Image 1 (cartoon, rainbow, N blue to C red):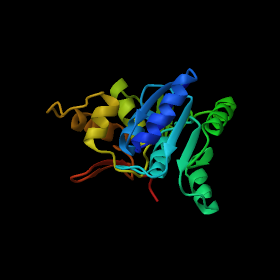
Image 2 (cartoon, rainbow, N blue to C red):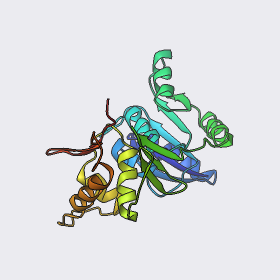
Image 3 (cartoon, rainbow, N blue to C red):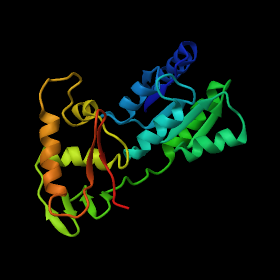
Image 4 (cartoon, rainbow, N blue to C red):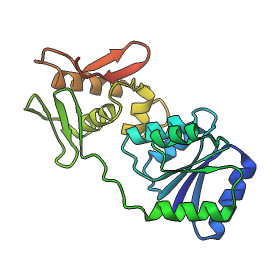
Length: 225
């Protein structure tokens, strides 16, 4: 089984990683929420995510909420020292599937992982939308108010990423990493060019624009009120 562990305490992470690998599992580890989100939403496919609630850079709740917003359906087991009922409910409402309070017996951790892996997969969304703009991920089509919009491959990917984050500001760096797989600034206007083309295709001729530039921050898709 391929498992992602996001845990900032080195001793705990080493203990879990060693134990899981001894039982034949493949484990990737991140020690902060930002890197954990990058791995959870990347190209690798995990069968279970083990996420600590309290993490540097991005806490576990935000990590899981962000992952679920991009249609990551992998089962999530939260690890935490917070044992209150309200804490458990908050974790489950954020998108978690199970909760294990520290300290815990390794045998229980294994049992919970196996139980999560046996659950039937949740069907991921096959369509995205904002207002009267709709994207069919299976047919690879885009329409607005019923009108077909023809997009190039990279334009489709940019719009898909924006629609997966409706109402959230998406930065230039996020687009470079997720759409073009650039983990450095190529010093080109590739993002700006694609945004301009996309805006002309999805907004031109319609009363209310959907694609907005947030000066100094990035871009956002907002559905009209």
